[in-house]
Length: 165
Image (cartoon, rainbow, N blue to C red; front, top):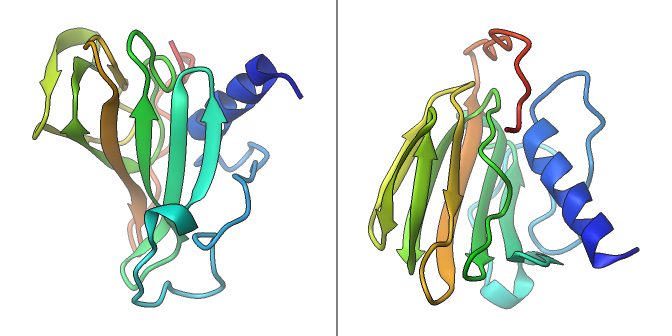
């Protein structure tokens, strides 16, 4: 499979992961694969995390699945090359936090752009358009924590606008 095809598949996975009608696409196998039942306390090292590479950089998935209080949780780190983005601005049913660990870029939140720098944290509600692009000179590293809470209904898609811009 070509790098371009892998990149397109990866983007599709991130955008559609929470949609009930979508086909679930799997990331590469690794220590962080979803486990049956709630996750157990553990440490996943960088070299144990499931890695996916594309023309924009690398995505490392650490935990996914279910915890005591969440379902559909994903914790991961993205390492984005200068001038690139993991994907365009998008939206989904899960709540999400993005934490800039290293580098700089540009946030996109509901159509407004603002500078992103180390130490920034973005929280996004379900179905709100958001994104992060590396506009700096070095690599942009950010942490992703995305989830749905147990006992809280997943909010339905509010309209038929596309989920990726």
